[in-house]
Image (cartoon, rainbow over the protein chains, first blue to last red):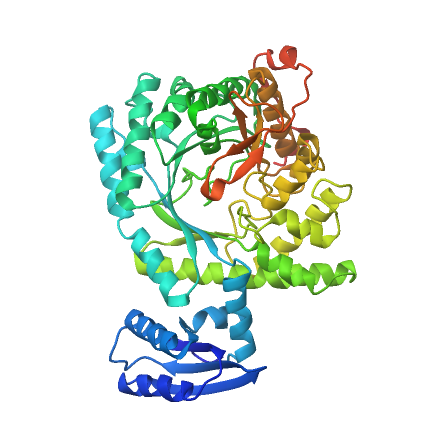
Length: 94
Length: 454
Protein backbone atom coordinates (compact mmCIF):
# COMPACT_ATOMS: atom_id res chain seq x y z
CA UNK A 1 0.00 0.00 0.00
CA UNK A 2 1.21 3.45 -0.81
CA UNK A 3 2.53 5.56 2.00
CA UNK A 4 0.41 8.68 2.35
CA UNK A 5 2.29 10.24 5.24
CA UNK A 6 2.79 13.96 4.59
CA UNK A 7 0.65 13.78 1.50
CA UNK A 8 -2.12 16.29 1.28
CA UNK A 9 -5.23 16.31 -0.86
CA UNK A 10 -6.38 19.61 -2.32
CA UNK A 11 -9.88 19.67 -3.76
CA UNK A 12 -11.33 22.49 -5.80
CA UNK A 13 -15.02 22.63 -6.56
CA UNK A 14 -17.04 25.43 -8.15
CA UNK A 15 -18.07 27.22 -11.31
CA UNK A 16 -15.53 26.80 -14.10
CA UNK A 17 -13.47 29.84 -15.05
CA UNK A 18 -10.17 30.61 -16.76
CA UNK A 19 -6.97 30.02 -14.80
CA UNK A 20 -8.07 28.01 -11.77
CA UNK A 21 -5.34 25.39 -12.11
CA UNK A 22 -2.78 28.05 -12.98
CA UNK A 23 -3.51 30.12 -9.87
CA UNK A 24 -3.42 27.14 -7.53
CA UNK A 25 -0.27 25.68 -9.09
CA UNK A 26 1.52 29.04 -9.04
CA UNK A 27 0.80 29.33 -5.35
CA UNK A 28 2.01 25.78 -4.69
CA UNK A 29 5.22 26.32 -6.64
CA UNK A 30 5.91 29.59 -4.78
CA UNK A 31 5.63 27.69 -1.51
CA UNK A 32 7.77 24.77 -2.70
CA UNK A 33 4.90 22.28 -2.53
CA UNK A 34 5.31 19.45 -5.01
CA UNK A 35 2.31 18.28 -7.07
CA UNK A 36 2.22 14.47 -7.40
CA UNK A 37 -1.07 13.93 -9.20
CA UNK A 38 -3.95 15.91 -10.66
CA UNK A 39 -7.35 14.68 -11.77
CA UNK A 40 -9.99 17.01 -13.03
CA UNK A 41 -13.47 16.83 -14.52
CA UNK A 42 -16.18 19.26 -15.53
CA UNK A 43 -19.73 18.20 -14.76
CA UNK A 44 -22.41 20.51 -16.27
CA UNK A 45 -20.20 23.57 -16.04
CA UNK A 46 -18.90 22.72 -12.59
CA UNK A 47 -15.21 22.44 -12.11
CA UNK A 48 -14.06 19.55 -9.96
CA UNK A 49 -10.37 18.95 -9.28
CA UNK A 50 -8.33 16.86 -6.91
CA UNK A 51 -4.60 17.24 -6.44
CA UNK A 52 -2.27 15.07 -4.42
CA UNK A 53 0.63 17.14 -3.16
CA UNK A 54 3.70 16.53 -1.05
CA UNK A 55 4.19 19.15 1.64
CA UNK A 56 7.39 17.79 3.21
CA UNK A 57 9.49 20.69 1.84
CA UNK A 58 6.73 23.30 2.09
CA UNK A 59 7.82 26.83 2.96
CA UNK A 60 4.64 27.40 4.97
CA UNK A 61 2.97 25.40 7.74
CA UNK A 62 -0.10 23.34 6.89
CA UNK A 63 -2.61 25.67 8.53
CA UNK A 64 -1.33 28.79 6.69
CA UNK A 65 -1.36 26.94 3.38
CA UNK A 66 -4.95 25.93 4.10
CA UNK A 67 -5.93 29.50 4.88
CA UNK A 68 -4.15 31.04 1.89
CA UNK A 69 -5.64 28.50 -0.53
CA UNK A 70 -9.02 29.31 0.93
CA UNK A 71 -8.45 33.01 0.13
CA UNK A 72 -7.35 32.21 -3.42
CA UNK A 73 -10.48 30.09 -3.79
CA UNK A 74 -12.64 32.99 -2.64
CA UNK A 75 -11.06 35.27 -5.28
CA UNK A 76 -11.72 32.66 -8.00
CA UNK A 77 -15.24 31.98 -6.77
CA UNK A 78 -14.53 28.31 -6.05
CA UNK A 79 -14.19 26.31 -2.84
CA UNK A 80 -10.70 25.02 -2.08
CA UNK A 81 -10.15 22.39 0.59
CA UNK A 82 -6.87 21.15 1.90
CA UNK A 83 -6.81 17.94 3.95
CA UNK A 84 -4.22 15.42 5.02
CA UNK A 85 -4.59 12.34 2.82
CA UNK A 86 -4.85 9.79 5.63
CA UNK A 87 -8.55 10.42 6.17
CA UNK A 88 -9.33 9.15 2.65
CA UNK A 89 -6.86 6.32 2.83
CA UNK A 90 -8.32 5.07 6.11
CA UNK A 91 -11.91 5.38 4.97
CA UNK A 92 -11.62 3.76 1.55
CA UNK A 93 -8.89 1.12 1.99
CA UNK A 94 -8.97 -1.93 4.22
CA UNK B 1 -3.88 5.78 -5.08
CA UNK B 2 -6.88 7.69 -3.76
CA UNK B 3 -9.19 8.80 -6.54
CA UNK B 4 -11.40 11.82 -7.00
CA UNK B 5 -14.63 9.90 -6.38
CA UNK B 6 -13.46 8.64 -3.02
CA UNK B 7 -12.35 12.12 -2.01
CA UNK B 8 -15.69 13.56 -3.06
CA UNK B 9 -17.59 10.85 -1.21
CA UNK B 10 -15.77 11.57 2.04
CA UNK B 11 -16.20 15.31 1.72
CA UNK B 12 -19.86 14.94 0.88
CA UNK B 13 -20.32 12.91 4.08
CA UNK B 14 -18.71 15.69 6.08
CA UNK B 15 -20.31 18.67 4.35
CA UNK B 16 -23.81 17.43 3.56
CA UNK B 17 -24.49 14.41 5.75
CA UNK B 18 -23.24 15.64 9.12
CA UNK B 19 -20.39 13.15 9.47
CA UNK B 20 -18.41 14.17 12.50
CA UNK B 21 -16.40 12.78 15.34
CA UNK B 22 -18.79 13.30 18.20
CA UNK B 23 -16.33 13.37 21.04
CA UNK B 24 -12.75 12.92 22.13
CA UNK B 25 -13.03 12.02 25.77
CA UNK B 26 -9.94 11.99 27.94
CA UNK B 27 -10.29 9.60 30.84
CA UNK B 28 -8.26 10.59 33.88
CA UNK B 29 -7.74 8.52 37.03
CA UNK B 30 -8.10 10.52 40.23
CA UNK B 31 -7.01 7.65 42.47
CA UNK B 32 -3.67 9.32 43.19
CA UNK B 33 -5.47 12.51 44.30
CA UNK B 34 -7.11 10.83 47.30
CA UNK B 35 -6.47 12.52 50.63
CA UNK B 36 -8.37 12.56 53.91
CA UNK B 37 -8.15 16.35 53.96
CA UNK B 38 -10.96 17.75 51.81
CA UNK B 39 -9.14 20.92 50.83
CA UNK B 40 -6.02 18.99 49.84
CA UNK B 41 -8.15 16.51 47.86
CA UNK B 42 -9.82 19.29 45.89
CA UNK B 43 -6.48 20.92 45.23
CA UNK B 44 -5.04 17.61 43.97
CA UNK B 45 -8.03 16.98 41.69
CA UNK B 46 -7.83 20.42 40.12
CA UNK B 47 -4.08 20.16 39.59
CA UNK B 48 -4.25 16.70 38.04
CA UNK B 49 -7.08 17.44 35.61
CA UNK B 50 -5.73 20.78 34.45
CA UNK B 51 -2.27 19.27 33.95
CA UNK B 52 -3.24 16.10 32.08
CA UNK B 53 -5.95 17.78 29.97
CA UNK B 54 -4.09 21.02 29.36
CA UNK B 55 -3.69 20.46 25.61
CA UNK B 56 -6.84 18.42 24.95
CA UNK B 57 -8.96 21.12 23.34
CA UNK B 58 -6.09 22.57 21.34
CA UNK B 59 -5.12 19.12 20.04
CA UNK B 60 -8.71 18.41 19.04
CA UNK B 61 -8.82 21.64 17.09
CA UNK B 62 -5.54 20.83 15.32
CA UNK B 63 -6.91 17.49 14.17
CA UNK B 64 -10.06 19.21 12.90
CA UNK B 65 -7.88 21.50 10.78
CA UNK B 66 -5.70 18.70 9.43
CA UNK B 67 -8.58 16.60 8.14
CA UNK B 68 -11.37 19.16 7.82
CA UNK B 69 -13.61 16.97 9.96
CA UNK B 70 -15.57 18.49 12.85
CA UNK B 71 -14.80 17.13 16.31
CA UNK B 72 -17.90 18.34 18.07
CA UNK B 73 -16.98 17.78 21.70
CA UNK B 74 -13.84 17.56 23.75
CA UNK B 75 -14.59 16.11 27.15
CA UNK B 76 -13.10 14.65 30.30
CA UNK B 77 -14.16 11.65 32.35
CA UNK B 78 -12.76 10.93 35.78
CA UNK B 79 -12.74 8.16 38.38
CA UNK B 80 -16.16 7.92 40.08
CA UNK B 81 -16.18 10.67 42.69
CA UNK B 82 -17.73 8.40 45.32
CA UNK B 83 -14.38 6.54 45.56
CA UNK B 84 -12.19 9.60 45.27
CA UNK B 85 -14.01 11.47 48.00
CA UNK B 86 -14.64 8.54 50.33
CA UNK B 87 -11.78 9.33 52.72
CA UNK B 88 -12.47 13.06 52.92
CA UNK B 89 -16.22 13.55 52.58
CA UNK B 90 -18.31 13.23 55.74
CA UNK B 91 -21.62 14.45 54.30
CA UNK B 92 -23.29 15.31 50.97
CA UNK B 93 -22.13 18.95 51.18
CA UNK B 94 -18.50 17.79 51.25
CA UNK B 95 -19.08 15.93 47.98
CA UNK B 96 -20.55 19.08 46.41
CA UNK B 97 -17.15 20.76 46.84
CA UNK B 98 -15.69 18.04 44.58
CA UNK B 99 -18.37 18.74 41.97
CA UNK B 100 -17.42 22.41 42.06
CA UNK B 101 -13.74 21.54 41.67
CA UNK B 102 -14.53 19.34 38.66
CA UNK B 103 -16.59 22.18 37.18
CA UNK B 104 -13.76 24.65 37.67
CA UNK B 105 -11.25 22.24 36.11
CA UNK B 106 -13.57 21.68 33.12
CA UNK B 107 -13.83 25.43 32.59
CA UNK B 108 -10.07 25.90 32.90
CA UNK B 109 -9.36 23.25 30.25
CA UNK B 110 -12.08 24.47 27.88
CA UNK B 111 -14.02 21.19 27.63
CA UNK B 112 -17.81 21.28 27.49
CA UNK B 113 -18.62 18.45 29.93
CA UNK B 114 -16.84 16.51 32.64
CA UNK B 115 -18.25 13.12 33.65
CA UNK B 116 -17.59 10.98 36.68
CA UNK B 117 -19.59 12.51 39.49
CA UNK B 118 -20.63 8.93 39.90
CA UNK B 119 -21.18 6.00 42.23
CA UNK B 120 -21.05 2.30 41.39
CA UNK B 121 -23.55 0.63 43.69
CA UNK B 122 -24.77 -2.37 41.72
CA UNK B 123 -24.75 -4.61 44.81
CA UNK B 124 -24.94 -2.15 47.66
CA UNK B 125 -24.15 1.37 48.81
CA UNK B 126 -21.45 2.40 51.28
CA UNK B 127 -22.21 5.40 53.50
CA UNK B 128 -19.98 7.43 51.17
CA UNK B 129 -21.80 6.23 48.04
CA UNK B 130 -25.06 7.29 49.62
CA UNK B 131 -23.64 10.69 50.55
CA UNK B 132 -22.56 11.22 46.97
CA UNK B 133 -25.94 10.20 45.61
CA UNK B 134 -27.73 12.50 48.04
CA UNK B 135 -25.48 15.37 46.96
CA UNK B 136 -26.37 15.00 43.25
CA UNK B 137 -29.34 17.44 43.16
CA UNK B 138 -27.30 20.24 44.71
CA UNK B 139 -24.16 19.39 42.74
CA UNK B 140 -25.96 19.47 39.37
CA UNK B 141 -27.87 22.65 40.25
CA UNK B 142 -24.74 24.52 41.31
CA UNK B 143 -22.36 23.46 38.52
CA UNK B 144 -22.54 23.88 34.74
CA UNK B 145 -20.45 21.12 33.17
CA UNK B 146 -20.50 18.27 35.67
CA UNK B 147 -22.30 15.07 34.63
CA UNK B 148 -23.37 12.42 37.06
CA UNK B 149 -24.15 8.73 36.77
CA UNK B 150 -25.07 5.94 39.14
CA UNK B 151 -24.72 2.26 38.30
CA UNK B 152 -27.47 0.47 40.20
CA UNK B 153 -27.26 -3.02 38.76
CA UNK B 154 -25.38 -5.56 36.67
CA UNK B 155 -25.86 -9.03 35.25
CA UNK B 156 -23.30 -10.35 37.76
CA UNK B 157 -24.68 -8.68 40.88
CA UNK B 158 -28.39 -8.16 40.33
CA UNK B 159 -30.11 -4.85 41.03
CA UNK B 160 -29.67 -2.79 44.17
CA UNK B 161 -33.30 -1.79 44.65
CA UNK B 162 -32.46 0.46 47.61
CA UNK B 163 -30.33 2.52 45.22
CA UNK B 164 -33.05 2.44 42.56
CA UNK B 165 -35.63 3.70 45.06
CA UNK B 166 -33.27 6.44 46.18
CA UNK B 167 -32.53 7.44 42.57
CA UNK B 168 -36.27 7.90 41.94
CA UNK B 169 -36.25 10.56 44.66
CA UNK B 170 -32.91 12.05 43.56
CA UNK B 171 -34.13 12.53 39.98
CA UNK B 172 -37.20 14.39 41.26
CA UNK B 173 -35.10 16.53 43.62
CA UNK B 174 -32.69 17.35 40.79
CA UNK B 175 -35.65 18.39 38.65
CA UNK B 176 -37.01 20.55 41.50
CA UNK B 177 -33.63 22.24 42.07
CA UNK B 178 -33.36 23.23 38.41
CA UNK B 179 -37.06 23.91 37.74
CA UNK B 180 -36.33 27.45 36.54
CA UNK B 181 -34.43 25.88 33.62
CA UNK B 182 -37.00 23.23 32.61
CA UNK B 183 -35.45 20.81 35.13
CA UNK B 184 -32.26 20.82 33.07
CA UNK B 185 -30.22 19.18 35.86
CA UNK B 186 -31.78 15.80 35.01
CA UNK B 187 -30.26 15.97 31.51
CA UNK B 188 -26.88 15.57 33.22
CA UNK B 189 -27.86 12.53 35.30
CA UNK B 190 -27.91 8.91 34.11
CA UNK B 191 -28.88 5.72 35.95
CA UNK B 192 -27.15 2.62 34.57
CA UNK B 193 -27.22 -1.13 34.61
CA UNK B 194 -23.98 -2.79 33.39
CA UNK B 195 -22.24 0.60 33.00
CA UNK B 196 -19.10 0.33 30.83
CA UNK B 197 -15.79 1.63 32.23
CA UNK B 198 -14.75 3.26 28.98
CA UNK B 199 -17.82 5.06 27.65
CA UNK B 200 -16.82 8.37 26.02
CA UNK B 201 -20.39 9.70 25.74
CA UNK B 202 -22.02 12.04 28.24
CA UNK B 203 -23.79 12.20 30.54
CA UNK B 204 -22.78 8.66 31.52
CA UNK B 205 -19.02 8.81 30.99
CA UNK B 206 -16.69 8.00 33.86
CA UNK B 207 -13.14 6.67 34.02
CA UNK B 208 -13.47 3.13 35.32
CA UNK B 209 -11.38 1.88 38.21
CA UNK B 210 -10.03 -0.86 35.95
CA UNK B 211 -8.51 1.71 33.57
CA UNK B 212 -4.96 3.06 33.42
CA UNK B 213 -3.92 6.55 34.55
CA UNK B 214 -5.10 8.41 31.45
CA UNK B 215 -6.67 7.19 28.24
CA UNK B 216 -8.19 8.60 25.04
CA UNK B 217 -11.60 7.26 24.04
CA UNK B 218 -13.33 8.47 20.91
CA UNK B 219 -17.00 8.43 20.02
CA UNK B 220 -17.93 8.57 16.36
CA UNK B 221 -21.31 9.33 14.91
CA UNK B 222 -22.98 9.75 11.54
CA UNK B 223 -26.67 8.79 11.36
CA UNK B 224 -27.00 11.17 8.39
CA UNK B 225 -24.43 9.19 6.42
CA UNK B 226 -26.23 5.89 7.04
CA UNK B 227 -29.57 7.45 6.09
CA UNK B 228 -28.17 8.81 2.81
CA UNK B 229 -26.58 5.47 1.95
CA UNK B 230 -29.88 3.68 2.56
CA UNK B 231 -31.71 6.07 0.24
CA UNK B 232 -29.77 4.38 -2.57
CA UNK B 233 -31.09 0.88 -1.74
CA UNK B 234 -34.82 1.50 -1.27
CA UNK B 235 -36.87 -1.64 -1.87
CA UNK B 236 -33.82 -3.91 -1.91
CA UNK B 237 -33.56 -7.14 0.13
CA UNK B 238 -32.45 -7.32 3.78
CA UNK B 239 -29.11 -8.64 2.62
CA UNK B 240 -28.44 -5.51 0.57
CA UNK B 241 -29.77 -3.33 3.40
CA UNK B 242 -27.45 -4.94 5.96
CA UNK B 243 -24.46 -4.82 3.65
CA UNK B 244 -25.00 -1.10 3.06
CA UNK B 245 -25.21 -0.30 6.78
CA UNK B 246 -22.09 -2.38 7.49
CA UNK B 247 -20.02 -0.69 4.80
CA UNK B 248 -21.09 2.75 5.97
CA UNK B 249 -20.38 1.94 9.63
CA UNK B 250 -16.94 0.73 8.60
CA UNK B 251 -16.13 4.02 6.89
CA UNK B 252 -17.40 6.12 9.76
CA UNK B 253 -15.49 4.11 12.33
CA UNK B 254 -12.24 4.34 10.37
CA UNK B 255 -12.39 8.12 10.66
CA UNK B 256 -12.87 7.77 14.41
CA UNK B 257 -9.92 5.41 14.61
CA UNK B 258 -7.73 7.86 12.71
CA UNK B 259 -8.72 10.74 14.99
CA UNK B 260 -8.16 8.61 18.09
CA UNK B 261 -4.67 7.57 16.97
CA UNK B 262 -3.75 11.16 16.10
CA UNK B 263 -5.03 12.49 19.41
CA UNK B 264 -3.21 9.75 21.27
CA UNK B 265 0.05 10.52 19.45
CA UNK B 266 -0.19 14.27 19.88
CA UNK B 267 -1.11 14.12 23.57
CA UNK B 268 1.21 11.24 24.45
CA UNK B 269 -1.72 9.45 26.09
CA UNK B 270 -2.60 5.85 25.17
CA UNK B 271 -5.62 5.12 22.99
CA UNK B 272 -8.39 3.18 24.71
CA UNK B 273 -11.41 2.44 22.56
CA UNK B 274 -13.61 3.65 19.74
CA UNK B 275 -17.28 3.87 20.58
CA UNK B 276 -19.04 3.43 17.27
CA UNK B 277 -22.41 4.77 18.24
CA UNK B 278 -24.87 6.39 15.89
CA UNK B 279 -25.52 9.45 18.03
CA UNK B 280 -28.16 11.80 16.64
CA UNK B 281 -28.36 15.57 17.09
CA UNK B 282 -31.38 17.83 16.71
CA UNK B 283 -29.97 18.99 13.33
CA UNK B 284 -32.16 17.99 10.39
CA UNK B 285 -30.69 14.92 8.66
CA UNK B 286 -28.78 13.75 11.74
CA UNK B 287 -31.43 11.41 13.07
CA UNK B 288 -31.60 7.70 13.98
CA UNK B 289 -35.40 7.83 13.65
CA UNK B 290 -34.92 8.93 10.03
CA UNK B 291 -32.85 5.77 9.40
CA UNK B 292 -35.68 3.65 10.81
CA UNK B 293 -38.03 5.53 8.50
CA UNK B 294 -35.74 4.83 5.58
CA UNK B 295 -35.62 1.13 6.51
CA UNK B 296 -39.38 1.17 6.17
CA UNK B 297 -41.44 2.26 9.18
CA UNK B 298 -43.63 5.33 8.76
CA UNK B 299 -42.62 6.74 12.14
CA UNK B 300 -40.26 5.49 14.84
CA UNK B 301 -42.62 3.58 17.13
CA UNK B 302 -44.74 1.98 14.41
CA UNK B 303 -44.93 -1.85 14.43
CA UNK B 304 -41.66 -3.21 13.04
CA UNK B 305 -39.60 -0.48 14.70
CA UNK B 306 -37.98 -2.81 17.24
CA UNK B 307 -36.94 -5.27 14.53
CA UNK B 308 -35.60 -2.48 12.32
CA UNK B 309 -33.62 -1.06 15.25
CA UNK B 310 -32.26 -4.51 16.17
CA UNK B 311 -31.02 -4.95 12.62
CA UNK B 312 -29.50 -1.46 12.52
CA UNK B 313 -27.74 -1.85 15.86
CA UNK B 314 -26.24 -5.20 14.89
CA UNK B 315 -25.02 -4.12 11.47
CA UNK B 316 -23.44 -0.97 12.89
CA UNK B 317 -21.46 -3.17 15.28
CA UNK B 318 -20.48 -5.67 12.60
CA UNK B 319 -19.20 -2.95 10.26
CA UNK B 320 -17.48 -1.02 13.03
CA UNK B 321 -15.72 -3.99 14.60
CA UNK B 322 -13.88 -4.61 11.34
CA UNK B 323 -12.68 -1.00 11.28
CA UNK B 324 -11.04 -0.84 14.69
CA UNK B 325 -9.39 -3.47 16.86
CA UNK B 326 -10.53 -1.83 20.07
CA UNK B 327 -14.22 -1.17 20.08
CA UNK B 328 -15.88 -0.48 23.40
CA UNK B 329 -18.10 1.88 25.31
CA UNK B 330 -21.74 1.72 24.33
CA UNK B 331 -21.37 1.11 20.56
CA UNK B 332 -24.67 0.86 18.69
CA UNK B 333 -27.57 3.16 17.97
CA UNK B 334 -28.68 5.77 20.48
CA UNK B 335 -32.37 6.54 20.67
CA UNK B 336 -32.69 9.74 22.68
CA UNK B 337 -35.93 11.61 22.17
CA UNK B 338 -35.06 15.29 22.59
CA UNK B 339 -31.79 15.04 20.63
CA UNK B 340 -33.36 13.52 17.52
CA UNK B 341 -35.75 15.47 15.28
CA UNK B 342 -37.29 12.28 13.88
CA UNK B 343 -38.04 10.97 17.38
CA UNK B 344 -39.56 14.30 18.40
CA UNK B 345 -41.80 14.18 15.31
CA UNK B 346 -42.79 10.60 16.18
CA UNK B 347 -43.82 11.63 19.70
CA UNK B 348 -45.79 14.59 18.33
CA UNK B 349 -47.61 12.26 15.92
CA UNK B 350 -48.50 9.93 18.83
CA UNK B 351 -46.52 7.15 17.13
CA UNK B 352 -44.03 6.73 19.94
CA UNK B 353 -44.83 5.97 23.57
CA UNK B 354 -42.71 5.35 26.63
CA UNK B 355 -43.65 1.66 26.49
CA UNK B 356 -42.51 1.31 22.86
CA UNK B 357 -39.27 3.11 23.72
CA UNK B 358 -38.76 0.58 26.50
CA UNK B 359 -39.14 -2.26 24.01
CA UNK B 360 -36.67 -0.55 21.68
CA UNK B 361 -34.10 -0.34 24.48
CA UNK B 362 -33.97 -4.16 24.55
CA UNK B 363 -32.18 -4.06 21.20
CA UNK B 364 -30.47 -0.65 21.05
CA UNK B 365 -27.20 0.25 22.67
CA UNK B 366 -28.40 2.21 25.66
CA UNK B 367 -31.83 2.98 27.04
CA UNK B 368 -34.53 5.49 27.84
CA UNK B 369 -32.71 8.66 26.98
CA UNK B 370 -33.64 12.33 27.23
CA UNK B 371 -37.33 11.73 27.78
CA UNK B 372 -39.39 14.51 29.30
CA UNK B 373 -42.19 13.32 31.60
CA UNK B 374 -44.72 15.29 33.69
CA UNK B 375 -43.22 17.04 36.73
CA UNK B 376 -45.86 15.57 39.04
CA UNK B 377 -44.77 11.96 38.37
CA UNK B 378 -44.28 10.28 41.80
CA UNK B 379 -40.74 9.24 42.80
CA UNK B 380 -41.91 5.64 43.13
CA UNK B 381 -43.13 5.62 39.52
CA UNK B 382 -39.78 7.00 38.33
CA UNK B 383 -38.06 4.28 40.38
CA UNK B 384 -40.38 1.72 38.77
CA UNK B 385 -39.35 2.88 35.27
CA UNK B 386 -35.70 2.67 36.38
CA UNK B 387 -36.21 -0.85 37.76
CA UNK B 388 -37.81 -2.03 34.50
CA UNK B 389 -34.91 -0.70 32.48
CA UNK B 390 -32.32 -2.13 34.89
CA UNK B 391 -34.04 -5.53 34.61
CA UNK B 392 -33.80 -5.41 30.80
CA UNK B 393 -30.08 -4.73 31.07
CA UNK B 394 -29.47 -7.33 33.75
CA UNK B 395 -31.29 -10.17 32.01
CA UNK B 396 -30.02 -9.37 28.51
CA UNK B 397 -26.41 -8.84 29.63
CA UNK B 398 -26.33 -5.40 28.04
CA UNK B 399 -25.87 -1.84 29.14
CA UNK B 400 -29.09 0.01 29.80
CA UNK B 401 -29.45 3.54 31.03
CA UNK B 402 -32.19 5.96 31.96
CA UNK B 403 -32.11 9.72 31.57
CA UNK B 404 -35.58 10.96 32.43
CA UNK B 405 -36.50 14.59 32.93
CA UNK B 406 -39.57 15.11 35.10
CA UNK B 407 -40.26 18.71 34.10
CA UNK B 408 -41.55 20.55 37.14
CA UNK B 409 -44.61 22.65 36.30
CA UNK B 410 -45.23 21.06 32.92
CA UNK B 411 -47.71 18.44 31.77
CA UNK B 412 -48.25 16.05 28.86
CA UNK B 413 -47.85 17.65 25.42
CA UNK B 414 -46.06 20.80 26.58
CA UNK B 415 -42.67 21.48 24.99
CA UNK B 416 -39.39 21.62 26.87
CA UNK B 417 -36.32 23.36 25.48
CA UNK B 418 -32.86 22.23 26.63
CA UNK B 419 -30.83 23.98 23.95
CA UNK B 420 -27.81 22.99 21.88
CA UNK B 421 -27.08 19.31 21.33
CA UNK B 422 -29.62 18.38 24.01
CA UNK B 423 -32.47 19.65 21.85
CA UNK B 424 -36.13 19.93 22.81
CA UNK B 425 -38.91 17.49 23.59
CA UNK B 426 -42.64 17.20 24.15
CA UNK B 427 -43.57 15.95 27.64
CA UNK B 428 -44.66 12.30 27.28
CA UNK B 429 -47.40 10.56 29.28
CA UNK B 430 -46.48 8.02 31.95
CA UNK B 431 -48.64 5.03 32.94
CA UNK B 432 -50.74 6.40 35.85
CA UNK B 433 -50.94 3.21 37.93
CA UNK B 434 -48.84 2.85 41.07
CA UNK B 435 -45.88 0.56 41.82
CA UNK B 436 -45.33 1.98 45.29
CA UNK B 437 -45.67 -1.34 47.11
CA UNK B 438 -43.11 -2.94 44.80
CA UNK B 439 -40.60 -0.10 45.07
CA UNK B 440 -41.16 0.07 48.85
CA UNK B 441 -39.59 -3.36 49.38
CA UNK B 442 -36.03 -3.33 50.79
CA UNK B 443 -32.87 -5.01 49.54
CA UNK B 444 -31.86 -6.19 46.11
CA UNK B 445 -33.00 -8.31 43.21
CA UNK B 446 -30.66 -11.32 42.90
CA UNK B 447 -28.49 -11.86 39.83
CA UNK B 448 -30.19 -13.91 37.11
CA UNK B 449 -29.47 -17.60 36.65
CA UNK B 450 -27.38 -17.09 33.52
CA UNK B 451 -24.89 -14.92 35.42
CA UNK B 452 -23.38 -18.11 36.91
CA UNK B 453 -20.85 -18.78 34.22
CA UNK B 454 -17.91 -19.86 36.37
